[in-house]
Length: 371
Image 1 (tube, one colour):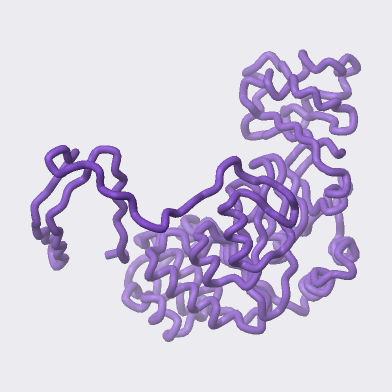
Image 2 (cartoon, one colour):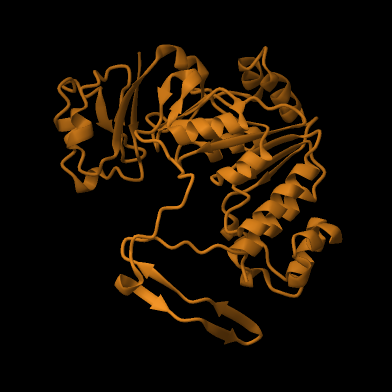
């Protein structure tokens, strides 16, 4: 077994605690198992000397420590670690030309890290303290599709485009009107029209909503002539109609290219991806990419909470969808709220609402396109 001891640097604050991790560690008499790093001011745990008792995990007042045992053979698949005692990522999805690879999983399991590595923005250190060079990465994946992929990427024979997850940062770096920015980015008129951005040409970037920024980011990525397209959560902030429009454009324009889509919307992922991997592990501590599965199979196993081929349970309970809607138990006279038919007008906008009610214990969903 391989022991992983991770300290969350954002949570760890030795100045505000009694340094319980050092005080209560039963094997820390020499001070070489747990100590405070002078450079960062944060606790560090030696994974080689840690006995895995878990006392520090329970004693830490900030819940900043995670200690886990993983199979020794998995350590050979370690791809990246941010710093000693930091988050670890195991495995990468296999990418092939003409195939859209989907990545799904909880937050803080390494999806964005994986996307940055595949986009060439981050050279993985292969979990070596001395780091790794691009040629080391190519060598580490010899005999796989990733060897040729990274060889082309690092050798500048393949160009990658990465659509970032945090689209709300766009106004901090881009100034001006949408039309001007689109022209500088080389976005063709046809793409602006299909993503309904042409009507926003005279609007300032700072005034765009989250959905409008998302569509602009997707358009800018698709406008570039590249060999690799990485989309990190392209459906966020979009309504269902816009999500399917974006998905159609991605499928249409990444044919015969490398394509990776990180997405939480399983419907969009099912529609877009040919194959998919499920990320599982301990959020903030380590993430493991499953072996590739057909997109539908990966989604079903993710919902079931069990990866059959890996004999791994990733959730205590399965996510189930009822075949029929539940019967309405609350009679109208016991409704929590009810309303008559009405019409609401705001400027040129008009909303018609039919008569209805909400019963106690019911959850009412509202569906429909934006605006």
